[in-house]
Length: 256
Image 1 (cartoon, one colour):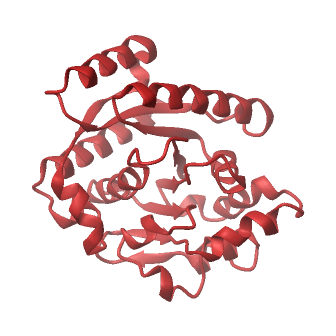
Image 2 (cartoon, rainbow, N blue to C red):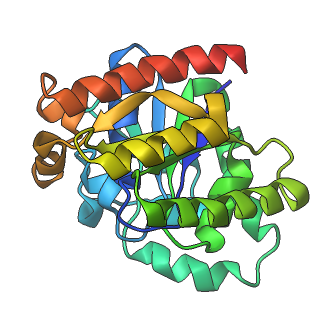
């Protein structure tokens, strides 16, 4: 059965999409069966996985409105080695359309349950706001992976996210927990980043992943080629760090 994880942070620009596509590619590289679900209407994770969001016949929008199944809407990304349930601008309309339907926050959960035995991991790229889309992701997931930069404002955003996860856990999804915090865009030469990193480890202990993703130009360049960094340049430091993170995730799941 698939383990389902949201990659979420209410703060924008922290590398959620970069984390999602590179973790998906890293997991595929170490032999895992992966489905990447893009829940952001911008469709960046879709494009960054080698799938053209403008050419999709079916998307996650159709799955949420129950006009298609995950099996019908998901596409195989040959370059990346995992399945993509893509998103495009249509998804922005789902916010409004879901407001009045039954089981609106559990639509994605029910759809994923039908394919849970076909994958080892399902990774959900969530939008930065706490919307009906994010709620669908959180209600579907066994846990949340939180990418964060080691900066002061990131700590404030983390407090908000932890409170949100507690509320969803209490009211909608008893399985939901924080799986771990991933330090991204990390530069050890900056004293403040080192200090915030130490604070995180002191406060969250083993919830902080051992793997650290360094600030890396090749990871930033990869989306313009429609690929995760792990596929675009496997030898780059950032790519190697994501493969190490994938291996750490596999080990962590064994203990869950």
